[in-house]
Length: 207
Length: 207
DNA sequence: ACAGCTGGTGACTGACCAATCACACACACG
DNA sequence: CGTGTGTGTGATTGGTCAGTCACCAGCTGT
Image (cartoon, rainbow over all chains, first blue to last red; front, side, top):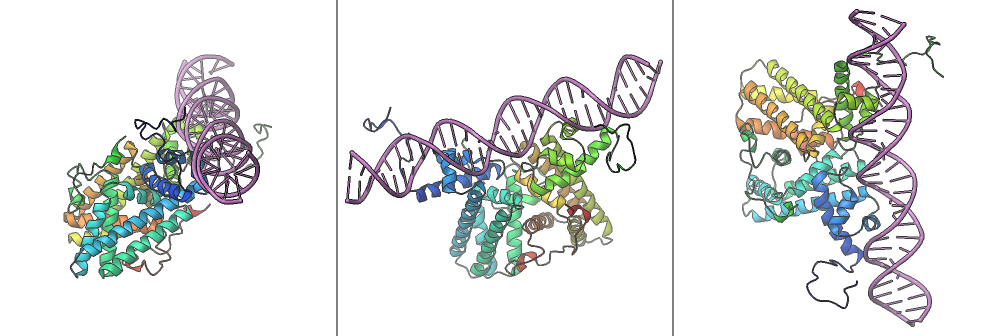
C-alpha cells in the first residue's frame, strides 16, 4: 500500500508534507489557524478544523501548541504582525511628507490588506473573545503596535490617529455585515469613501 | 422530602416567581439573555446560564423560544430597540437645531447608555457571530435603524453620520479591551475626547 | 369533582470537543 | 544492528451542551 517505490508522478498531493521540523509545522499550523479561526471565531471552531486545514492530526496540534487558547493567541499575534508590516509598507510607499497624506496612504494599504476578510474577521472574533485575559492582552498589544506605527511613521496628530483607528473599526463593521458589496441605499452614507478593492475573489472562498 | 404541607414561613425566597403568563416570562428571559449573552457571547454561553439568570429551568427557555439562535436574535433586536430609543431621547434633548450639535448630543446619549458594557458587548459578540445569517441580518436591521434615526432626527450629512458610527465602533473597541479606565499612555490618543461617564457601577455587575 | 388548559420541570440523549497517552514510524549515530 | 531522538497518529476520556419528552402542578369552567 505504500507508494515509496512506485514513485510515479500521478500521485500528486497525497503525502503533502512527509517530514518536516516541528518549527516549520508550527508555522504552517499558525497560518492555517489564522484562516480557520477567522471563519467562525474562537469558540465556534474546533482545533480539529485547524488540524484538517494543516493536514495533520488534531493530536499533533496539541503537541505543537500547549492549548487551543495558546494557538488562538499565537494566530492573533501573527495577524497583527502582518497588519503592522502592511502599514509600514504603506507608509514607505507615500513619498509625500504630509502627515495626513501618509496616514491616508496607510489607510489604503490596510484596505488593500484586508481585501480578503481573513485578518479583519480574526480581529473581530478576538474582540468578542476579549473577556479571556490572554486574548484581551494580545489585542491590546496589537493595537498598541498599530497606534505606534501610525504615530511614528506618519507623524500625524493624535486626533488623526484616533480617526484612523475609528474608520478602521467602521471598516470591520461593514465587511463583517457584508455591507460592502451590496449596499442597501440606507447604508450608502456608511460605505461612502471606503476604498475597498473591487473584486476580492481570491481562491480561499472556495468551499 | 416534599415541603407541601410543612408550609412554615421560614422558607423565604424559595418560589420567586410562582406564576406568570408566558409572555411576561418571555420578556424577563429576554432581558436576562441580553445581560448573559453580553458576557461571553453567543457560542460561549449555554442557555442554561440564561435560564439560571431568569430563575427558570433550561427546558422552559426552549418552550419560550424555539432555539438558542432565536433567543440570541431576539435579544439582539431588543438591544437595538433600546439603543434606538436612547438615541431618539438624545436627539430630543438637544434644543438646538444645528445638525452637528444634535448628532453630538446623540453621541453623548449613546455614551451614557453604554456606561455599563452590556449593550455594547452584545453588539460586539453579534458582529463576531455574523457568519450566522440570522445574526447578520438582525445586525443589519439594527444598524439600519441607527443610521436612519441619526439621519432623520438630526439632519446631519452622510459624512457626519458615517463619522458618528465610526466613532461608535471605536468606542466598542476601547471598552471591550478595557482601555477606558486605565489608559496606558500609548492609548491616550485613542481615548481622547471619549466622553465616558465616570462611575458605571450599576448593580448588574454583582456576581 | 372532574376535565381541560397553561405554566413549569427532571431526566435524558445524542452529538461534539479539548486534551491525553500509548504507540508507530523515520531517521540519526555508534 | 541497536539505541536514541524527534515526528506523527489512533483511540480514548471526561465533560459540556442543545434540544426533547414525559410528566407534574396550578388555574378555570361546568
